Image (tube, rainbow, N blue to C red; front, side, top):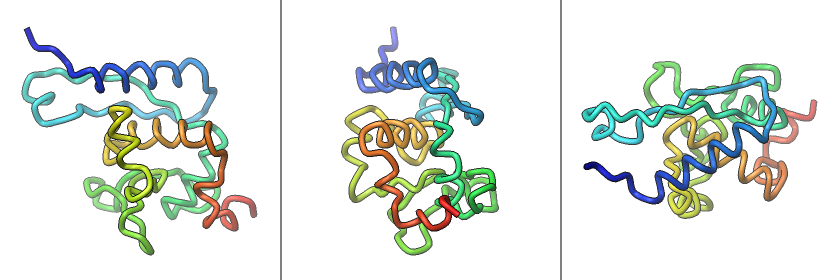
Amino acid sequence: MHKKPAYIITGSLVAIFLIFMIPSTTTYEREPKSTEDEATGITDTQIVTLRPELVPICSCESMQGKNGTPTHYEADGVTVLRGRVNQNDIGICQINLDYHEKAAISAGLDLFIEADNITYANLLYEQQGNQPWSWSKQCWTE
């Protein structure tokens, strides 16, 4: 019998909580966590919702402008978006690896996976408001 590590289960519970507690208009389907998941057919699919307050912030962070649609990938649709100024800013919500990677891993999240990036951004917003994205404030407050 194949057991899932506790961090995957914990991350899943956090994501499920967020789905039911946070209203939004933007949802994303979670991808398999690894190639092993793909090989075994275990997809652990779930829907993750981006907080409405984060939609314009993440749109600006992913260089789509305040009214654009946030994106996790470069134009090729495969390469995960990295910051233009700081290459350690990752994905749809441009979560900085230097500051947040250890906490994300502890929560069972991989910031390179779109749904996990969103899940972490939702948690970060809940704890710190929009402060972590203050450098782009001029874009999302216009």
